[in-house]
Image (cartoon, rainbow, N blue to C red):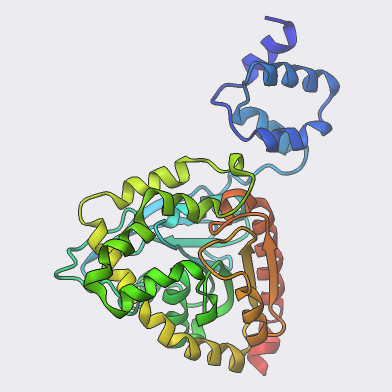
Length: 359
């Protein structure tokens, strides 16, 4: 082994990953280190230690002062799992996940924002590590989810927060907003819908399921819960498929195939029709209150219509709208960009709080 390789091998260890990120930052390292790194690239070897050194030299080391904690709390007779990070006296961001994900989807933001904000992300009942009650005895509805999540915020003492909503987080979050508007300082919408026109072409099968459940149940489960559908939710029509970790959808597909999941997800999605009926209420609230609003949208989003971000801007003309180079789960490949957008938005919206409260 050559000397630079040996020195680097003694310094680093671990699986290869994050190649593009490492390459993006190697230009700031001394030539000898670059040479050693390139030799390891030829060997197919990168490690988290290299990435850490590069980030630190380049001023982009992710914060380690506030680690993520993985907790549970009893809510309405259920064990609700949640992730929490950051100083509790900092501004709070409450993050609500989508289908078929969990609070795990927000780990990239926890790694990048916990130095500045108090981050809290629960798993809904029937998702992730929260309890999965039997659908025969538990109502899997968005009204129920919003009620439980409001109780969750009360149990944790979260009286004011920025609400981050992705996918299913939209219908849960907007219900929470209407129930307790005084708790919400600002809204962040990431690939979530509040307009009927925002439901894309693949919703034809889903609307048929709403209209007549029994004969359309099998087609709905294929459309919504199959491996192909689970993969497409992440990749969409992005030509850069190699940017996506396949574990993202294989892990989710494994989750969807656990006992009871098909019934849970079918019941919940059947209730999704109530969201369409509620859209005008959410729109009216936004038009009246003009909340600080950040809309983040994946360029390769395939679940929803690409015109949806501008519909939010029609409701809230001062909304920030950003289309990022990613799919439905935009944090998959655009986490750095999104973290920067969130930082700038939350800081600026909080700066406007005194004026809004006085008004």
